[in-house]
View 1 (cartoon, helix red, strand yellow):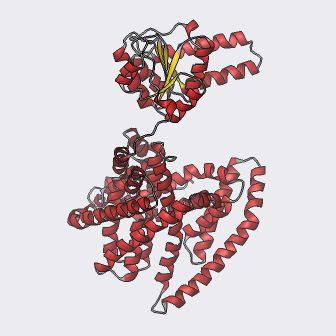
View 2 (cartoon, one colour):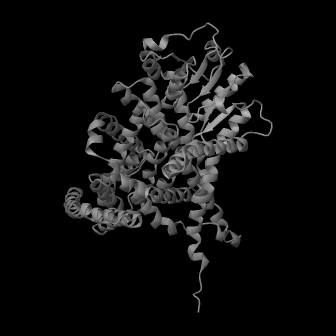
View 3 (tube, one colour):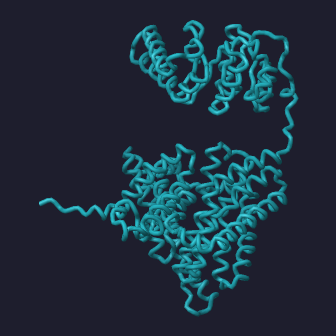
Length: 595
């Protein structure tokens, strides 16, 4: 007889998967940060949102989570994976390279912010231990959100990106001893704090030493054995076993599960399997961290927000102001530029996910009052939700206070003003340089434009006609002779800039031949609507070249392959172009086969 299945047992898992698989991708289409989307869904579907109406509307039971404790386990695993990845990404070389920012700016920010915030909490009648934990909890920022926002805007390698990452790295390292401190303080039962701390340190050292010794002896042989099977499933299973198993061993020894996972990450960071492990766990890490932020959203009580908005807004404003001023002052003290200091200060000023980890642990250990923690965490949630907005403000402020760019001498040369019919190549990257070399090979005059003075200087020193400037500005295009140009070839990868350049050039010269690089088929279709003569989608062109190489390698005659590729390219072009294109396509003989 078939076993009866209780759908309610799987309801919470379905809610999580629906959030991660449907709602978050839908939110991303409207440029909503995925973490904000998880938190918003948690607030909406949690016990303080629609989940609180289950008794009145039983139908809501199927799409809500009325008991947030049901997700505590997956959320704790998400935190453990976050600390595992942090340990995995740490290395002695990275710490040495960034030691000035990590241990100077980062450590100073954590200590000063915690002292100031904790001092205010103590003045507001919080016990010393509670004030200490609140201070350190609010001193931390959101690693997950800041890194995601910086990566999305391609700013991780900028000065502000590296500085923000250094502060976040120091904060992530600080989480481990803070979790240990809460465990020690929570275990005190009126005895001597010093004696209790010493005993806990000895106990923790013995547990950590055992984990490290076993890990050093067993991890590399284990992963060598698993890798030799050439089975991705076995590799994934071994990775999950090490991360969760070490966390559970640490938890059994009286430490936190996150601390054990962090140690496992540190041990694996020394092995040759580090990068493969990072790639393997990425989907699981993102999903489990999403579950954590879902539970964060469920802890937000709109009634409490409405009942005490002044207190919560005051805590949020004080948090933002305190951390921003601390970071700004320390950054300037370390001789960082004003624009870097301002952008970094704004990015790391909001609270972060580890405030929830620390304060919830402190509430469980009866070190912080539940009501006080709820108010503080509501303020932290408010600052985190507004972080994407702060990221835009940070960039605008950084641009406003940026020092004037000192151009290399080669980049100060103005474009020729002789009304010659040259082609204009936008971009001096790898694609732009290849296009320029093809034009030179076929004796076609051209000039290259780019907004990167370093690239321009390099091209000028190589004897190529390159000029510095912003091609999205119509006045600069006119200065470069777009009115007399024979063609405009846009090779840059920034799709917004490509759109602006095409619209500006088409407005200045309706009959100009424009060939543009497209991100994908959808972007190519959009560029045809803007009036380009030809759009080259990266994804389609790469697939055609792969097909060409494969067919030739399989013995198909080169002539047949080239003809087939040309035919397939024309099919794609006809599919992508609008029915009534504003400009004719380039003739086949006038186009390079591999533009």
